[in-house]
Every structure is written in structure tokens, then in C-alpha cells.
Amino acid sequence: MAKLLALLVSFGKIRLFSFGGGNSMLLMIEDECVKRHHWITTDQYSAMTGISFLFPGLTAFKLAGVVGYQVAGVTGLVVSLLALNMPGLILMMVFYTIINAYKGNHLVAKSLDGMRYAATAMLLSVLWSFAASTGKAYFSMTAVILCLVFCATLTFFDLNAVLGMIGFIALFVALA
Image (cartoon, rainbow, N blue to C red; front, side, top):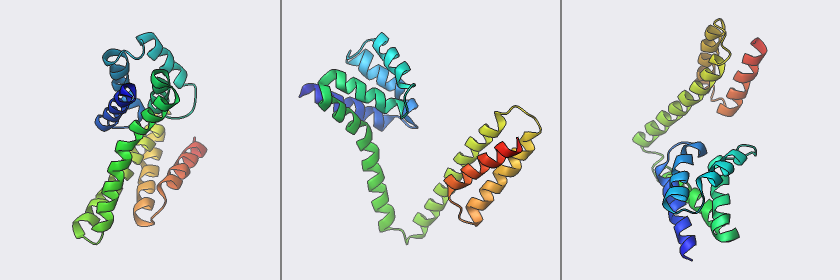
């Protein structure tokens, strides 16, 4: 039971204090599992990380599952994965409940608009780096124009962001 509690606290802490995707958690996982608790060795961690890149899915979640399994079997695997997911799910449910309760509030509506534009800007930065990675100078103007078209369609025509991104990539590849 102590091992399960330690897994719960460690992976919950990793999720609460790391921002970004699964790869942003890798250093914290190494620190908790190798240096602090000595559940695995540095060599085991390196091997697990390398192998995890071969298979689809988020690296941090695969590592949490493998470490949890090694520490406490199938129950450890389940506890580690729940601990890594629960803080984000709980926070998301709390904020969703608050937003739904006050969706008629002018300040909440403006905040949601701001989040939409921030998400659009993040998508644009991904699209820009995709376009810039071609390394061809004449594509930079094409990329700028396509990014502006993408932003305009998201803003004025309420286009689904994922569909817009797929369209952007398809169009950019076709022009390349």
C-alpha cells in the first residue's frame, strides 16, 4: 500500500507541476523515479525512454505505466496512469463548471474569446514552424499568406481549427 501511495503522490506531483505535453514531464519523471525513490536505475530509465519513442502514444504516460508496473504490478500501472491524468481532469472539470455557470457574464465571454485567439496563435506558430522547416526562402511569403488565411477563416467563418490545420498543411504541401 505504501508503494501505491508513493506512486500516486509522485505522478500526481509530476502532473501538477509540469506544463506542456508529455515530453515536458520526462525530467521530473527521471528525478522522482531514479533519483528520489530509486525505483529504477538511470540505465533502465534511458532504456525505457528510448523504447517508448518506438511506440505510439505520449512518452510520459508510457513511462508512468512501465514504472508503475515495475514498482507494484498491474495495480501500480493503474495508479500511476490515474495519478498522471487526474489533476488535469479535475482542473478541467472545475474550470468547465465555472465557465458554464457564468457563461452569460461579459468577462467570462471575453476570456473565452481570448483563449480562442491564444489557441489560434499557438496553432499558427506550429504552422509557421512547419512552413519554415522547408528551408526555402520563397516559401516564407507563402507561409505568411497561408497563416493569415488560416487565422481569418478561424475568426470570421468559425472554421474548425483541426480541419483548417489539415487544409493548411495539404495546401502547403501541394504548393511545395
